[in-house]
Amino acid sequence: MAGIRDIVDGPAFVALPNALWDVAQHPVPGGPHWQQGVTWEEWCGGGGTLMDECLAVTGTGGAPAPQTSMTGGVTQTNRGATAFTVFAEFDCSAVGQDLERNQAEEALLRTEAWQVSRAFWTGQAGTTAGGAATTVWPHLAANAVLNDPQGIKLQTAASPMVTGGDDTAVVLGALESQLAACYGGVGVIHVPYAALPSFASRMLVKQGDDGLLRTTAGNVVVAGQGYTGSGPDGSAPAAGTSWIYATGALFAYRSDVFVRDFPGTLDRTKNTIRKIASRTYLVGFECCHLAALLNLGVPT
Image 1 (tube, rainbow, N blue to C red):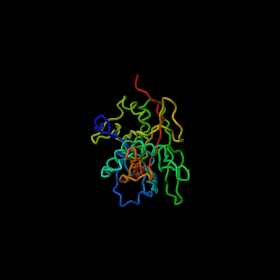
Image 2 (cartoon, helix red, strand yellow; image 1 turned 90 degrees about the vertical axis):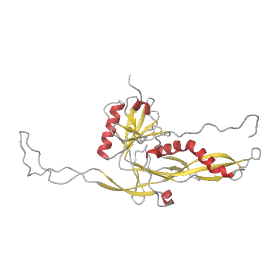
Image 3 (cartoon, one colour; image 1 turned 90 degrees about the horizontal axis):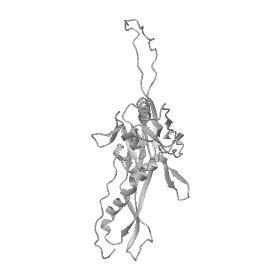
Image 4 (tube, rainbow, N blue to C red; image 1 turned 45 degrees about the horizontal axis):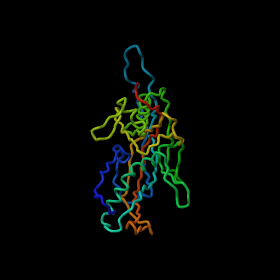
């Protein structure tokens, strides 16, 4: 827009670190079909420990009875996830269309991480053309299991933890202990921004060599911009509290940025046209789905 003041570039936008996409694994898609949803096999649970009853035992403690059968096998489950699309509207100059791609990516970048993490936490993804609510599967704040008509598990119910104390370290310790028993590998702790200082003040999280936040046990921390802190039933947390979640490893797909016009939106007074930039995501996780209520605060 012409004026007496010089037209300059504003400050560069820098995305916040430790977002959902940053932490997730990025499998190479075999094509665009993942946007219709995906199905995969997961292997959860643990094994067992056997004692050979023929072993000689010395000392006064005696020996436990030998284990006569193998229990505690690994469970194979078919899991599924659905895709969702985030978007941003922006005004684009009707001339100089070669700049359209950069403008679209810049417009979407400013809200993309917030939208993705909000959808993955709450499961809310707007409405259909007919006004029906749409849901992202799977999502964190859920207290019911959902299987599709083929019996593929789309949603698990978060298991609330009983910590026996409200100190941040106690809550995180209980959550990671259960995560280790459930998964055994590097999992993910999902923390709203409001709860992150409670962990940092106790030095319970640190930046790893890969630049990601990690707990002292080695689990990755997602500090989601759009994470709401709501509980498994979807209700908002009470003042001074926040829910946090733990899952197995994350994986995610995302498409390229797609740009399209809004028909009939040419503004001849400004010589601009309204456009929309969008990108499709899919996020899934393995095995564990745990939740814990945290009292916010720092050490006194």
